[in-house]
Amino acid sequence: QVQLVESGGGLVQAGGSLRLSCAASGSIFRITISTMGWYRQAPGKQRELVAAITRTKSTDYADSVKGRFTISRDNAKNTVTLQMNSLTPEDTAVYYCNLKDYTVTDYWGQGTQVTVSS
Picture 1: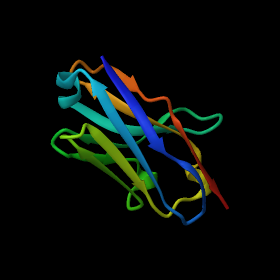
Picture 2: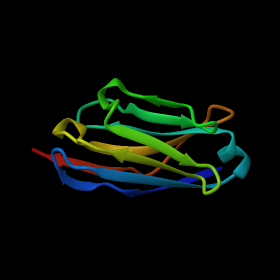
Picture 3: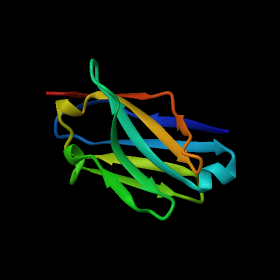
Picture 4: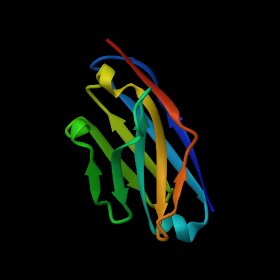
């Protein structure tokens, strides 16, 4: 099994920046062979992928965040970080850390609130 613990988030003005971090623990084998990423869910909307990164550092971003958000991963520390710049009110949501292991099983963090004021 895998546990994910998130940190970061909070309230920021439009144009500002925030950094989210997520630490994975548990099955080292599952963590090592995994894709890690961030999803978000705004009120009344479905959860959506924000960014993901594989063990070999290949990345994928939602079109809405390309050029503004950067995902990175430290395989030695089993952490994934999302640097969010040029935030807009449309980025307001609960952000969830995700790990998808080699069996395509999803693990989720508890979620962290990001609020961007205009």
